Amino acid sequence: MKLARFSPPIAAALLLGLTTVIGPGTVDSYAASDVPLPIAHFAHMVVDARHGHLFISGGAGTDGILVTDLDGGNPTTISGEPAATGLALSGDGSALYAALPGRDAIAAISTENLTESARYGTGAGTRPDSLAVAGGTLWFGYGTAGAGGIGSVDGSGAVTLRQDSGTWAASPTLATTPTPSGVLAAAVQTGDTSAFVTYRAEGGALTRQAAKALPVPDLSDFAVTADGLHLAVSSWLRASSNRYRTSDLAVDGQFATPVAAKAVAIAPDGTVASCGCNYGFEAFPETGEGYYHQYEYAYPLRLAVHGLAWASDGSRLYVVGVDASGGTPRLRTARDPETAWVHLNGRATTTPLAPGEAYSFRAGFDSPLSLDAGESMIPGAVRITRYDAADPDGVLVPDPTTTPGRTPADFFGSYYVSGTAPPTGPLSFRVDYSGSGHYGPAAQTSTCPSRSTRPR
Image (cartoon, one colour):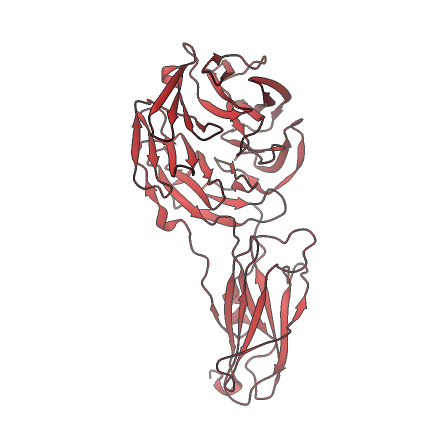
C-alpha cells in the first residue's frame, strides 16, 4: 500500500515549541452507520438510488432478498427468492435481476413495487450465479466445476446458453462498467492463475476481445473501469496496482493504490474502492498517487467478497463486513468518500520570542492524496490571520509568500509570513484552508509564547 505523505502535525508543533489547536479533524465517517444485517450470510449488493433502496442477497440458507433504505434502515424482505446470489439492475433501473442457482433460474423483480414480475428458467443443472447487464442484454455466468458457460436473457425473456464458444473451468464471474455500456468481462480461477476474457456485447451476442491467464491465484472480485478501458483485479496473494487493458488484457499503467482487498468497486466517475489490506478499504483515484480516504474494520470483521458498492453520484460508498466464517454481516456507509483529509502544520523559526524579536511563520500541508501532474501548490484558498495583544480580534495577513511544493519536504507547497514579536503577550496565527476538488477544508491555530511566559 502506498503510504501518505504526512507527519503528525501535533508532534511537529511540539518539536518547534508551538502550542497548536487543530480544527475539526477527520473522524471515522462511517462509525455511526454500522448496521447489523438480518441475514446469516452475505452474497451480493446493489444500490438503487433512484428508488432509495439497497438490495442485498445472502446466498445459501436464505429465502429472500433483503431491502433497506439508503441508510441501511427500514429493512424488509422480498420473499420467495431462495438462496439468491448475484444481483444486477436493468439498464433503465426498472428491474432487479437475481440469480437463483438452486432453482436454475433468474428472477426479475420490479424496483417500483418490490415484487417478482418474471422468472426465467436457465435449464436443469445450470445453476446461474453471476449477473451483469451490458449492451442492453442480461448476461449470466453458469455451470459447475469443470463445466461453465455464459448465457443471456433478452428483452423478450428468451434464454440462450453457450454465448461464448470457449470453455470455462467453472461458472465464470461477470463484470461490466458502472453505467450501461457494451463492455463485459468474465473470469474464473484456474489453479495458480485466473482465466480472463473480455467481450463486446451488442445485439444479444458476444464478440471476444481478449483472453488471457492472469497471475491471480485467489480471485475474489474484479471490476471494469468507468470508461470500459481497463480491469481492476483483486488478489491478496499477488497484490499489484496493475491496470489490465480490456482490448488485449496487457498491463497498461498502474492504479493509484494496489488492489488486494476481497472486493473492488468503481464509481461512475472513475473512483476506485478497494485496498492493499484485509481489514479495511480505501477510496482512491484510478491513476496518480495516494488515496482519498482510508477506513478500517475492527477485528474480527473483514471486508466481504463483493462487499463494496457505490452510490451513483459518488457521495456514498456502501460496505459489508463479515466475520472469519463469512457470517454476522454488517453494513457500513462511508459518506463523502472522495474527499481527502488535509492537515495544516504551522511552524515558527524561533520560540519563545522576546519582544521585538524577528520571527517567521510557515504553514504547510499534509494529505494522503498527492498533487495532480503539473500542480505545484495544493489547490484552494488559504487565509492567515495574526493575533496579538494589540489585535485580539486578529488581522488578516494580506500577501503571504508562497513556496511551490517540493519533495521530500513541503510536498504540497507552503505559505510564509515574517515580522517582529509584539511588545507583550503571545503571538498567534490562524490558518484557514478552503479545500478544493478532492481536498477537504482544514483550520489550525498556532501560538508562539513570549519569552516572559516560557515555562520554568
